[in-house]
Image (cartoon, rainbow, N blue to C red; front, side, top):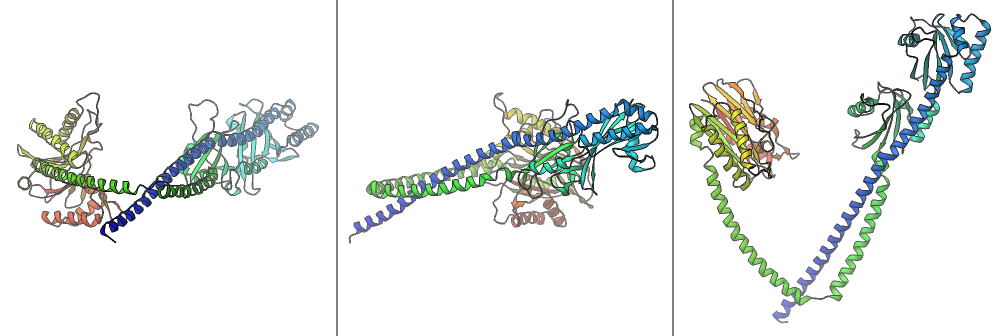
Length: 611
């Protein structure tokens, strides 16, 4: 077999492999399209189901239950007012209930009302004799000394013509509603009469309003106490024990500006298990109670799981069929072997040419960036300048790329040392360009006399940066920088910052002097002021200032940010080291924490001790 035949066989094998890859790629594209379509359909259906639940289903359930309760209580109110205004009962009570014949008729009337209207009981209590009558007999006399009779004296003193009280009886395991009506003039009532109704039938009906097996429904008063519930164990509990505090507060609060009764309101929250819960509540018309219904979201959209399963099975079947069709077309209908090989060779040649071009371009770009780094280093304080300005100091400056958006700046004017540490928008070349724009502006501000108050320097920098970045009125950018500035003169240090803090290590503790929470430039207002903080210098005081690149570097066992707490711990651990050792300590701590994670941002850490 000749060399040419061997080459053709190799090319044929190569073609077969490429054909398989083409088929796989096509099938993968179709699969992704089907998954996207199915996911979109699922989300649209899910959104529609949730929207229907919140705007229709939950509204219907809560309004149906509320109207049932309101109807019962409204009829009880009407009955109680009729009894309170009954001329016969008023005359009998005003006569001291001494007429035995009238007494018999009055008891019969109370019994008739309780029987015909299906009330648990009817009652009448006199303010002159303190007798307490029910539908069958006189029960006894009311006394202010008896706490259980407090309701009577409270009702008399309230002078409210009619009141509704709900009460859960643990012994009878049932909830009762008592409607109290004042007889005669509310200012000087003859007594209190009314009815008591058993809400057991409503409580039983609550189970029919439940959605699914773990949905629930409650009737609560303004204190949050649950009086009616589909689950018997919930009765007598507080709503705050079953719901998050913020949700409970929204349920129990009413808009003081609203007129009439609030309509249904829908809320949603996550329970302790992380499940999403839909909740609707409705104020009753007859009382100040609140009807609350909640349904787990997974119950209302549970049927979508079967739809999703069927969709996946259909997609897999369609994918198999499409794969088969592609294979038949590629192997039996179209067999462009020669064309494919020629095209492959041509593409390979062009790729090699393009790769060489990109390599050359990359070398030029790297050379340009290396030169840009040398230019950027001209605005950064030299080691000699730092040593002359401070008694002791170290600098950890590590751009994420060759150049970066962090820079530190130092000037000595009129026996004042001014140190600035800044973090400009962006990384690499864009960030470096921002530093080249910010540093000259900072130079001009200090030279023009803004060299006493770091807060004034930052404020002026904010104005000039915004002016420089937004020269066209129609184009507003969010470019800017975070910065911290220290002005040191004699025995004091004045600090101000824009999203950069200063850490002060004295002989007792480590203090964090916070900068403002707004940056320079961006959308910060022109009249924004940056607060100065003055520190009287003590012996061996040491100061640290860092950009967020060090604090935000992720790593550790849980891949979290290094954070401010660990940074303060590093200061505490390295406080007894000299500056050169501290620089190595911080750098090594960063490497150990970062492990295999790449550097996320430009990093700058400066520590210094004032002369």
